[in-house]
Structures are given as C-alpha cells and as structure tokens.
Amino acid sequence: MKKILFASTALVAASMMHAGAAEAADKIKLNVGGYSKWWVVGVWQSDKFQNISNVGGPLNNNVLAGTQGIGASTNGSGQRANFDVKGDNEIWFSGSTKLDNGLGVGVFVSLEAGGHSDLTTDVIDASYAWIEGGFGKVIAGTAPNGTALTHVQAPDAANGTIGGSMLGLNFAVAKPTSVMGMNQIVGYSGSTNTTAFIADDKAEKITYVAPSFYGLTLGASYIPNVMRQDVRTTPLSRAEAWGGTALYANTFGPVGVKASAGYIWVDISASGAVGERAMTSQVYGAQISYAGFTLGGSTQVTRDDHRSSALTNTLLSATGDTRAGLVSLSATKNSQQLDFGGVAYDVSLMYASGPYAVSVGYFRSEVNGIANVSTTAANSNNGRGDVIEFYQASGKYNLGPGVDALATVGYADYKDQRKGTMGTIDAAYENSGWAAMTGLSLTF
Image 1: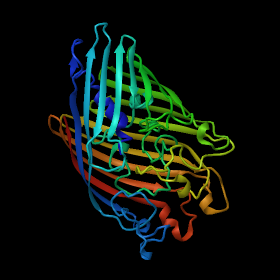
Image 2: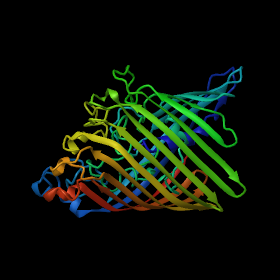
Image 3: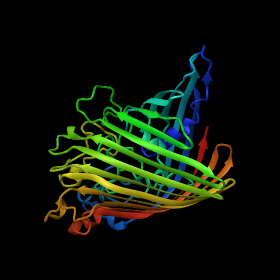
Image 4: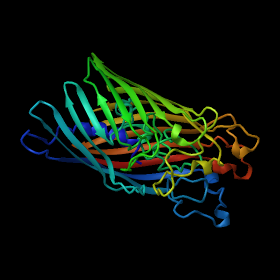
C-alpha cells in the first residue's frame, strides 16, 4: 500500500529534515511527526466477475478464504462486501545537526502505524541518512530514487496523486491477479498505478541532489541491487540500477510552472532468462498553475529488453515471502514468458481556494504482459496488453491546522489481455466498478 505513497511521503518529510536540529556540541535530537488517514469506503463492482472463478467458483463452494473483502485481488472467487474502513498511518522520526565545518547531517525514519495489513515483517517504511553542503545533498538508505523524488504527476485534491487513493491503490474495486500493472519487474511485484518509477521500492541506494540553479535541480541515484528489499545480506546476483533526473520549478508573475524528466536503467541479466539484458524507463511530468487552477500530467514509458526470451516471473522470488502482492505472475499468465514493458499516463485539473480544493483526473496503464501470440487463448497476448483505468474526482476541506476532511469518488476498470477469448471463464479476466469514500486526514 505504501509503495505509491513512498516518494510523496519523502517529499513531505523533507520539510522536517532541519526540524529538531542540534548544536554541533550536542547529539542529534529527534523530532516526531507523521499522519493518520481513515476512510469509509463504499464499492459496487461487476457481478459477473464476482460470480465466476477460474478455481471453481462460488457455485462449487470454492470461495477462497479471505477474498471476500473490498479490494481482494484474485480472479473471481465470490461476492465481496460493499462497505469497508481503510486506514493509512505513519509516524516519522527526524533530526539534524550542523557540524563545525559547516556540513549539515541528518536522519529520517518512518514507522508504519497500522490501518492496513500487507503481512510484511518490516514495519519500517523508510530509513535514511543525509549530508549536505554547498555541493548539494547526498542521501543513503531506503529513500526513493532520485527520479521518484523529483517526479511531477497529475494532482489530486484528497490523495496527492490519482494512484495514491484507495481506488488507485487497488484497495477498493478488486483487481484480477492476472492483470499486470507498472513497476512489477524487479523489487516490487504487486501492481502499482503511478507514472513514477518505484520498482526498486525499499532497496538500499545512494542519491545525489545538486543545488538548485535558477529553478533547475539535477539528481542521480545508484542502486546496487534492486531486489534487496528488507534484506540485509549480501546479494547473490547482480541486479544494479542507476538513473538521472531533472526538475524545473519556477514562477512567472501569476503563473507557476513545474516540469520533470528522468531515466532509469536496470540490469536484469541475473534473472536467468535467456536473452534478458536490461529494463529501461523514462518518466516525464509537468504542471502549470494560475489563479488557483493547476493542470498537470505525466507519463512513464518502460521497455523490457527481453531479446530472444523473457522472464516467467518477477526477479523478486515469492518463495517463502508472505507479503501481499508477491503472487506468481507465471501462474496467472499460464506459465508464459512475460514482457514487463508498458506505458502509463495521468492527467488532471485541480482548483484550490482558501480552505478547499477539488480535482478531476484520469489514469491509464497498458503493460505488454504475455510476450507471445499463440493459437491457445490462455497463452496468447492477442495483440494487446493488460489495461488499468481510473476516472477520479476528489475534494478536500481544511477544518483547522493539520486537519482535513477528504472525499473521493471514482470508477476503475481492470482488463486482462486475454479477455474475450477465455470462453466459460471469460468474466474472471475483467472487473470494473464504482467507489465512493469520505475520510479524515490528521498531520502532526
């Protein structure tokens, strides 16, 4: 759940980096912050999808345990509840000091504080240290990569981004497990609905951010092993990544402008698949604001250079790992070779005035999925990819310092590339529905 919010959390937390600063003669003192968000969610989704399953179906009394709640990710397998309560909570610890030589150093740690369960054994969402001076800032640890830190996306009044909502996080309308989304090839195998490159997830990395110059900020990241999420041992295989990014932010009279561009290269030759070489991803985004209105959009274009062969699963093995989302993509795609390349984009318009803000937006991703065309329906990509779409409207009203009332309504559609060819179980390969939710956000 945190993966899409990971980068935005770090940006908000950056404002705390100098909070709790100590004198050079003192140890660093930590400052406490964070947020608590709770949503009441209503969902109405496809009866055809709920009433059929490729594992037997409810008519055969084969409803999978734990899959009847809102947002359960599986193909078919029974009726789901129309009502749920969802939470998103973090506690932040940050502090900094300035050394006698003028360098600033600091630390940031974020702690998962409940509201959801992803079965992870690591409750620390992010942990990193930083050092800065006239040369810029160097960040080491489990911070987002530089392209994610600086990436500009379509704005959303209640959730920050479209993919950051309970709908966009796949926690409202149920996503069929066989539908692939962006950022699934390396460190995080669950679908993420964002144009930011966050596939490296919590892998340890080092990031450099140069001083801003007339509104232009440059950065770069190096990730020794993108698969090393929550693992402190030495990696056994080479899966390094590096990337560069640029962010421009400035105002021209009453007009505000933001634009970002980034590039990531990931070595996936260690996957064991014949011909696998690398994955590359380009990300772009822009916003323009005037008189309370903000128009924004972004895109991610990812290429899986599988050459003569392709992966049958993500690089991160699901063996012995109980975290939600680490499903066997090979099984959901009938053990076929997979192409993780794809395109995603979002666009939205937001208006903010005084204590309130409203927005309307759209997100779409298409991932290549099965790499081959076949006469067997279950083994063919049918000349198309897996598609995820969201239409979303949101609102926010500030009730007081750090207290906001939130609301979101939206429509989601998930479609497997084999939809329309699977005969009696065809309904299990697409789900769509509406979600409406209201909530409260507390920051501290």
